[in-house]
Structure formats: C-alpha cells, structure tokens
Length: 193
Image (cartoon, rainbow, N blue to C red; front, side):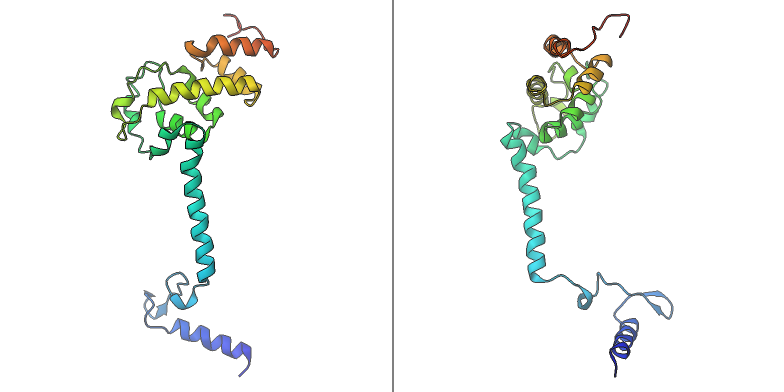
C-alpha cells in the first residue's frame, strides 16, 4: 500500500469515527481540537507555553510595582468606578482607563482620558470594589507625567493638544505651560484657545 493510500485510509477512518459529534445526519465533523489523537502539542511545547503565560503574568504584576504604582496591580478592571461619572467634579468618565494608564505608564492614555484634570476629591474611591485609593494613584501619576514631560519622554504634540483641548487641571497647568513655552509653544490666549 502506498503512502497516498495510507493517508486516504486514515482520513476515511477519521470520518467514520463514531465518537465524533454528528453534525448533519450521515456526515461526521472532523474536530482537530477535541480529538486527542490529532493534537500536535507535546510536553515540551506545553512547558514553553506555560512559561510564556507565567512571564506575561509576572510582567503584569511586577511592572506597576517596579514603577511605584503597586496598587494598580490589584485593579481587575471591573469598571465599577464608572459609577462616579455624574459625581466627578472634573468630568472624568473613564476612571478605569486611568488605572490602566498608571499600571502601564501610558502617559498618552492618561492625558487623553483627562487624568491631569483630577484634583483628588476622592469621589471615585467609594465605589471601587477593591477599595483602591484611586485619587492618590491619579495624583501620583499626574506628578509622574509632569516629571517625564520635563525629561522629554512625552511628545510635544501630546502636551500641546492637551493644552488646547483643556485637559490639564489647576495643579499642573503652571508647570506644563512653562515647559510648553520654553519649548517654543505658541502663547495661549483667549482668542487662540
């Protein structure tokens, strides 16, 4: 029997396997993910996959701890903090996005979601199911944003857009505007804003 005949015979046996689910009467469905004989993973490949999953989990936990935002590692993004939308005096609608920005040090996300408008009133703290001090975390991230901006790690265009769109609050406006003008930014007047 040739190799081609053997392959055809194996395919016929797979189609006639009575343990496989009956998709349409008289037609059997071939499912490579549920048939143990057809799986290609090996013990070594399973170990590599598990090491990759463990490394990704460790990175998710250790990155915020390393950057000083250890409380952000406890957030499991349930979005309960969105309940403060009407009560937030700074009109921040997506507090969970700010927590994610703190966890990953994503300055653009923090600025775009009005994180620099937060003046730490604490209204969002009461609805967090993990009892995280969100106001403290957002204030700490705001200070970090200003520091990184002065180091040149945040693009000028992001800062300029935030100034023009009114996304910078009172605690940070003086430092950021001074930096903006020192880098050659246009003067913001009531006429140009």
